[in-house]
Image (cartoon, rainbow, N blue to C red; front, side):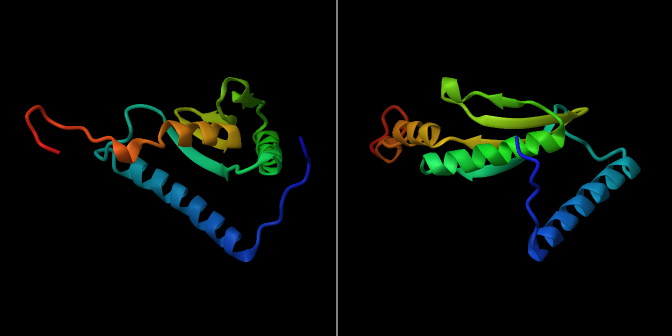
Length: 129
């Protein structure tokens, strides 16, 4: 893990400020309006690190997830050995903050699995394609 926090440029900082203000406004609105439903199950704020296209990108993005995990005070969930993702996740009651890295190998497997998608069409019995 690194102890380097990247500097945010003015646009990123403004976006971050808007996001935080929006979350605070949402919480206040929901608290003031008990008739408005909330998700029955947990809710996740997902922050993708991007999709890797090669090993170098994998290493940079894993380092970013390591940094985020350190900021969150949680261990990294490394599912890459089984073809999964690299995740930093912290729960705040039923709300979860999750930063995810999709390794290049996982993305290639996903692309291969879906490579024939355009050639397959679901039909109804008796229907002509």
